[in-house]
Length: 442
Length: 117
Image 1 (cartoon, rainbow over the protein chains, first blue to last red):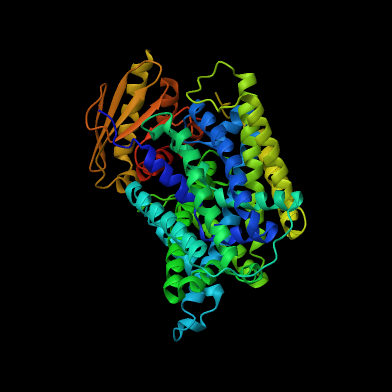
Image 2 (tube, rainbow over the protein chains, first blue to last red):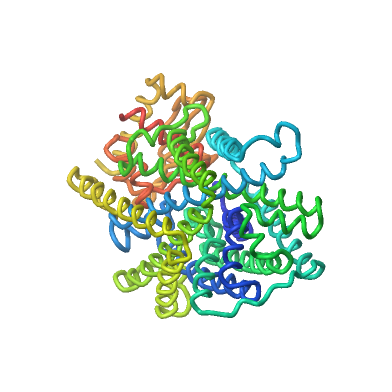
């Protein structure tokens, strides 16, 4: 007599990869190209992928030891206490809003570009497309529309196949542009790997599903598998973009992949990439907005965030207050991006936060191995402490790499302000909860 | 009182409050579910039978179908159904496990909130 909610390996891989494939990832790939050049871009994507496999092992070990829907918040609380857990969760919410703002701006630009030659619609400014996209996702989420597991598998497979097909077309059929090969430099390579971390953001968001998996080892297997799929498809696509379109042209556009599609196959290629972009935005944005609004809701209900964020829509049973607040903040950020054209700022900010969180996950694994050696661990990250420690150190280094010039100065400033506010707020809430007698975690 | 008896009493009190509360009945309109409560430390299972928005039975056994499952130690379940513990805090801390749809999770949390706020 069991609930029919047991998730299989294939569904988990599709969810993890589907969360990471986003329109803004295709734009982040251009930043990788710009940092290191076409010749070495694939290596930067692969290196970030290898590091993310080790991060996936860390999350796999933690999810096996603490198979709860609380996910990263529980891992951080168990390893470092409530203040750090709340700080990291708040940083995750900031990451979601930064990535959401970038995604909304890029998808709004895709729509503006797509309808440019249509009467009336061709005159609609990007800011209105951005507002319309965000409003669409707000309504979809408030109504509680979820992509079923089977549909997610089909959508992810379609997106990955289309990305690989486009990349193969560019590599084998596209006319290569003549460009002088960029000389290899270690600093540029580190920066390119740091930017490439953005391509994998979201693979670990399946850890809250740990209670629902069919086999306890499926989660630690699914995340590295998803990272592998992403590494191959993004690696090919990044190299292919740089092969057929000059990097300067790609950098100048908020929708560089549409240029690639059009260069390769005219209008057919253009619309194919519009389709990929729409699917990528729908799956990642919808799941991201839904997941993060529930985290904000749960934090409000347990007293870590203001109570008004814990209100539920009494018809659709969705956290409308958390959703509306996140919508308002993302809209404000997106509008700021529209008017400043600084769409790399939220992308780099999200990459920096994610690299820091991966470093902290590695530190949590190492600390728990020392402090709770007898804890049941159905999966243990291979390679011993050294591999986890090295990956954690490298992620910390990559976080710095995203902040260093030529990254816009707004990125380190926003990260510093976000971290300081999150930590100060977490300390205040933790001490308040201790004073009011909140039950300590087990 | 044994933990199982105390939990049953807490569930019956909760059921009575839910059935009396017009806001809860409106929220649960046409909602029919068997909610299983698996007590982690005693191995017992209780079932809250909800039919068209009314709790019609509190059974000290597993009554199929298993639409929703809540798993926690007895003191946690008693604390939640008596309004002493915050279900979302217990859930986030990993002391309470929920298996069921996200909408049902939200609905149950909203019911507990309305009854005990």
